[in-house]
Image (tube, rainbow, N blue to C red):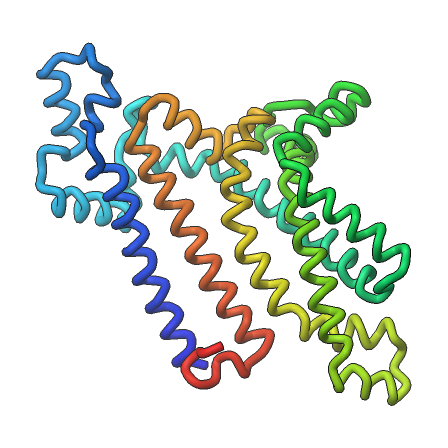
Length: 318
């Protein structure tokens, strides 16, 4: 197990370095002058030179990368051109919206998908199975931004139960904050829950046909207990795999959803930075989001080993 953990941590470090290199190359080596892009064609040569010096663009590329990567390791993300404040502070303030939103979305997705998938599996071929999987297919087809607009129309405009847009801040209390994030979280969660429910159903059906489940049933264990206690735990590996993949889609979805609901989160900050040609902020946010996906995928690998210790045998080969 120790060897498996070390291999995964080494792979994590290598992937993080590779991701930072790719982001740096895309943002700095492609044709065009970042300083000119940020200031516009009407900027004077002295202003361009001053901004290039401030951004370190007058240094060799390898020095620019080491300076930027070293700053990331120290928590120094540079100064935002648009806001004229440290990027680290901007990101930290927006995480107080994005992280709770992501957490609520994941909890809703898993809380809906697992029961729906198990119920559909236990009623395979029946009307309940067809209805649940039909609803799941509809959930896969519906874009999350369209679902968000529909929720605003119903629960904010018509029923006046929830705020349509904006975020009051956690200083106003937990309930107002949760209420502001509920519809965005549902918009993100339902399409992902639909996918996860279908995977859960297939995995549980396959696990339910294994010998250990039939043996448990032959010993007198109730069908429901056999499914929840034996089949589901052994069906979790493909479910966890999909959950890891969904995290990257969740991050991409926050860019759209936070703009639909006017939430001051990371996704909206990225959109505003792109619109304002704030390349320093864009570069930092992209590498942070990319690194988050890599870390989550590594945690998924470690979860595999926790679910099934046989995975860690033989140096972590699956």
